[in-house]
Image: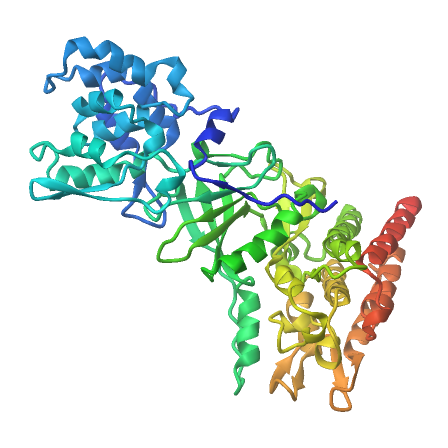
Length: 571
């Protein structure tokens, strides 16, 4: 089933979601008898990666600012002349159980004042009803004897403090000089790092301010190999690099502090708190909506062989404006082949391969299905993945899994798919589409492109899968591409496509070396009856030169299911 769920704007940094979360937060840091709340907050502040000059205080430690004893000690500090008569009501305002999990909480505001060593000002916040839901307060700067106030971009979407109230709080220039105001402006962000999660399986779109600090304890970019080509026009060179970088964005692996997310049960998580963060290259809202539209429609999850979108982030900074958050895979299919499927001897892996190929095909069928649903009207959907290859199939392993029973392959990177949907069929030509050349079908040179182009690319990928099973990863990486290598007159460089064109690009044929390669696999002693039939189906149906004669994804799934059932019956 195709989901129509679209991300819902979230302006409170996930605070309401955190309150509803069943996740338990414990820093392992009990209130200390020797350390003050000030010391504990400062020592807990984590430098955000990669913004090494920005810090956040994890929520599991931040909540110590509502511990009654610590708060009372802070209010009764010997350097403070805090009115004793005010202590009970301030304690109740900060520590009352009625306020702990509500929008009227005050422990964040109190934390900021403690960090700024302006604890006594908490009474002004209490008296004026300024609680945590008002954070971040507008930027306040000293201007002679007065102050200037700069509002935040998204302030209209949450409670806002009037200028008169801000002037009343910060008017004392002795207490709030340039340095102290700067400390407050800076350190309030430390206490409001977002909490990521889903509400009733709804994807949230976190709308953040430029000053927001993401609760990442580690961030590193995924490094993909660059392909250099000698091409005078340069166009196809750019297309190839585009595909290697993952469509419309760049992917990094981030670690989120454990008290700043709750996506429910994650059986395929390795427990490292790692996630994949995709930074979209374009700040254009329409392009963001296109990519998210595709991902949110097909969000059934890892068990259905589709990559689930966990959250989206809108935050203008030097790097980008839009980010997408996904589960972190253990690697892509190429990594899996090299490290866990390199000419395997375990016969159970053949059954697993058959099941995963069927699952991936069913996932592709799901992507294609919405086109069928709108076939008889003018709905502008053209559901095609557009860049199927081993690098866009991810390998997930359940925590502690040592064998195939806990492994799952997942189809990912739908960025191109949504792009294709908005283009009419008549303009679906090679010069319009940015994808990996290796797996493109003959129609990229001799005809119109359709969903059947995905079937060709899937057939190429399955052929590599079988190659790795029988001959090993080196054959996939080097031997098979080398024998397919052929000079392309149009592109003016060698390409390793699975077909070649004839008669000036008027027709095409499967490269004879590909047929020879398949014959070699047939003759290998490791080639079982299942693989014989699978290879025949790939060669004769999925890699059919005539686009319209190729099966649909649904038909491929039916054929692979039939093959798998025969395999089960024979074993």
